[in-house]
Length: 616
Image 1 (cartoon, rainbow, N blue to C red):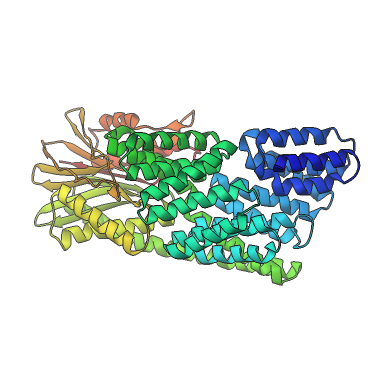
Image 2 (image 1 turned 90 degrees about the vertical axis):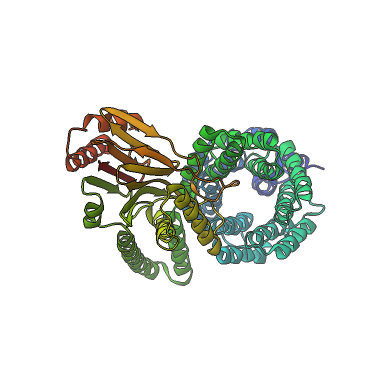
């Protein structure tokens, strides 16, 4: 008998008066994820016809609608349903029901990539749901979600701890044990402890035998595929991924299906099957966009960028590469990590102190935490300022020049760089992955790599300098165990008398000569990891008197503002620069800064800004 048939029979017993609607709901919550959306809707339509319309049952109905929309996003607005249910649970003083709704909100926010909000709801749910009540099932889900969130943040020890708490409470709930076993396997997979990971996947499969749980089965197949992928057994990996895909396509599993498409694209790319890889990557983009699955979108854009780069479509490769960084930063920004750790601290306090004492302690902890964070950021600012050339150094090497540097936050991912080697002046404007504290940390690595390339290896040719810097950056991130695609975009100038040698990674060079803007386009790859590493190129330009050189990052042109909240755009920036060529460089700087401020208006600054202008 299928889960739908069992639930349909249970509802028939409710209609006959042989059991309660609440007992049916408990059964539906435990098995609802195994249904198709149309089957779920059919059951809810029958529930609506039952005459008992008490406040509690009305609340449970709305909550169950929220449940359905959480796991089937195309069926409605989960956030609206669940927040409405929370208000009703509060009115009926059903704390455990409120906790169950908060658990589902955690899933909703996690799928959007809003991990701080997800974990906040996880912690509230843990406080509200008792270990032995009717909503016990949601407590298990809650610990599983907490494990997944910390896993996403690479806080593996915390994730393992949450998963083990879930196992302790699972008792006879075999499907949940299987699910958590799988979760533990994925952590050890990411820790590269492959044999331990495989053991947990096998245990999960064993626990799921005979329970007809296609969710767990399909996830285990997908993760075993990843295991074989790491082992470089691509044929086995493909077979398990296709087994997972078949189940998820049949059951229309939405967000999990996006994961299959991404993994298949990665796998086929490894096998040099670019056409099929692109098909799966585009399917992933379509589903992730339709479902607003922020946590998947950055992965989708990363693989699309790699595919288009290999296929030689530089424009699309760049577009998806920029989208990758945009969505990645939104999901993994430093603020999320800080908030989640603080919320976890607050929860630990709440479990051992009474409410009054806890509030006092929480306020003290919050104050201390904010003071510590403020001190840390201020210290990070001093460190970053130490790597930036001083005003006097800029004026010494480039007397007729200006530098505009406006981080989005106190510290930033953009930086400017100037060196002089044997009367050759090198200067650059760079944009590192991320902004804020995380961007600043990457900028330290990248700036250090530039310095080493010049001072240790004696390189002054732009192409060779960018190649060596990339090598050092990749080496540094590999040492730290970071397999992400961190690095920088850069525009790099080498000035030898009246000759300008230039190299660029994604960022161009503009030279304004006699009222005309001459653009030199960069190599369309950033300084960091790529599927295929290509050598950078050096461009040579013979400068003329009164030429003005401009190099910059993309923060200025990408700023939203104006009357309609639009981007400033590169074209507007070009028009501005052309209009101020008769001004001194100091005056140009003031005009450019004032234009940015006026355009931004009340809008938030969206990115770090760095511009260097040099008059020949």
